[in-house]
Length: 79
Image (cartoon, rainbow, N blue to C red; front, side, top):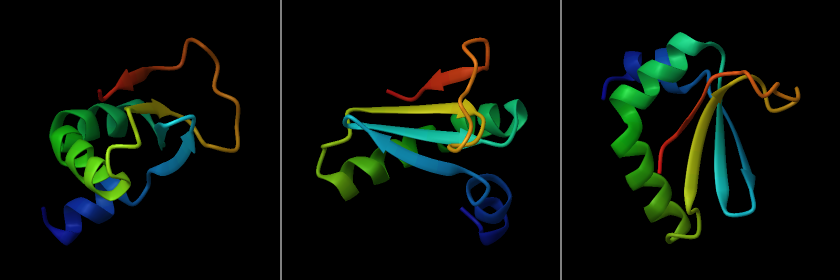
């Protein structure tokens, strides 16, 4: 992946770890869907290696880790 792709799609994401789960927060639905489609397998691979398989689920959703996300907010699980 290029530096431009990283800066455009991955840098805006925020991450939070809870109970062996990684939650990625995207700034909008378009970014969430694009990251899911184009980076899903790479993110899974990287997180698995980095955490020695401790993270069992990766979820990407629209929002901000400092704001509670309503139930109707789009979510996508990358498991």
